[in-house]
Length: 304
Image (cartoon, rainbow, N blue to C red):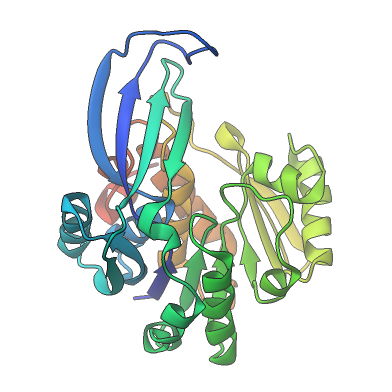
């Protein structure tokens, strides 16, 4: 069983199902409204836990009802929440998500407590990081905190996985040099490298630029086409499983979390782990909501 520590965000998601996305200045009616647990970090942690990982989380919630609810939900997943701080005078992070009839989403985030912890807070949780196989982080929490977490991981020989989302044009070189694997989607890969990723050839061009930044392993997810990997002289576009998507929220997070459950620390079984992650994501996009849509290992194993 892999031990995974996630440094990341925790959000309460407010979801609206709409026929199509709203235009500027326009008012439309939603077909359905519901709330669910979310946040890229929390989604990835839940995906890892449901896929069989021993999962720990480092982050923060506000001293409010949503914070209590999010903590309880993570505990129910068997996730170690000892690294999650409760911040007074801060509200728990929130995301406002519209999902159209094509299954595409538009998301607006209020960070709240997710931006109320930093490098010193991470340093105090070093024991969680040093007893891990992988440390995973995204860009919904302070970069300084992620850098400190990756520094601790690197000092203890722990592999680091960076999901550079939401996309950033200027990622600190210090962070990239501490990253063992980077896993953007095609849009995020283009933001970082300038390469418009549409297929295996363009994905390989983007991967080469990411390798030039000092990152050994590259995975680029390309929506319904699958996931491209480039590591140790081997590369391939691993096809996605063909399904009817109703909500793509948390699909990428599910991919990261599920992959970490099967991946070996030397990345020697990377393709196998990607296939497993593709199976998990194919289930997620057939369901509504972030964490409610994330599958369990027994479901993933049944995908053919």
